[in-house]
Length: 136
Image (cartoon, rainbow, N blue to C red; front, top):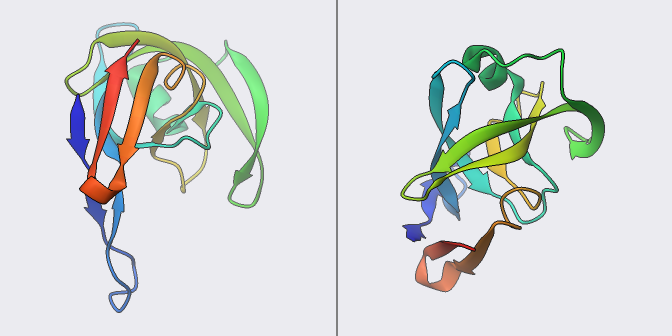
């Protein structure tokens, strides 16, 4: 499926707008709950990451899962809670994948290598203002 890059505007209005590979993602909770949000396709991220508030709103059990430490978020070390959840990228099939939930105001959602890139072929065509996601 091909998607258009999204135009993002910087906080400083004197700076030019830029394009980002964003997709709508639905996260699913254990009791039929779901949340839609935008996620950045991030080839530099090891895990798909979403803000911890999504886990709370979905009713996920935060006492289980694997705890890991990551670097690069807000310039330091942050703890992740890795949980297997179901998610669905717009126009693609639902998948079950490990997702890192993080308590960071700078992370809303991003799709990374483990559990996303390894399940999909992602092709960036920035010169044509599109990117493509093809399930394997």
